[in-house]
Length: 111
Length: 113
Image 1 (cartoon, rainbow over the protein chains, first blue to last red):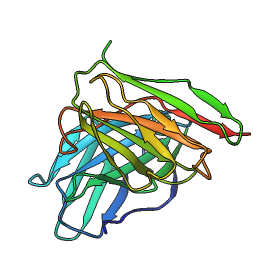
Image 2: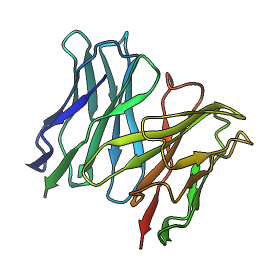
Image 3: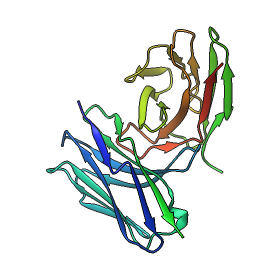
Image 4: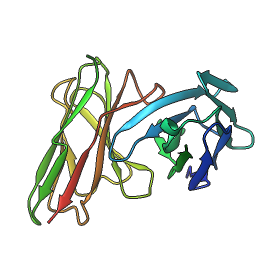
């Protein structure tokens, strides 16, 4: 059974710092991996989707990488801003076409 | 504006009542999903539908029911059989099956009084 883990559960950084959020999954047989942002009490906003055949995807200050063999994905945020404060969730699409979510990393960027 | 709408935003239910959460999308997506989110946790799949008049159980379907009579609509009923229904409920849709990017609605927070 696929399990997705995100470490750390919470992270606090000063504004301007570059940071990396980690996501690991137990079964490498995934179709894709998706990163989401969730603001308090809100729905999820899709940030990046990496297909299993890809190594990374970039959007603005965000870069997500995927290493299926090691069961890891990272989300790199460059030059962090207070507006980046939110919970970041990763989700792996498993072999039965179901999205399996991690429990998220709560990010606080201090001004 | 294309997107997914959920209503109501907040819902209060007395024990023993059934309640229905609405989910509508105008993205022309074939697939729709319902997830449940508990505090500090990720999302868990309740039900999903890849085409009109067809749906499948997810990982936590007990105590819930759905229908898919129209492509645009995928309502979720939380029945009295659901023992712990207080949670945040999120609806999503995608172009085809789950291989494609999923887009989410704003959510409904259900509280049992």
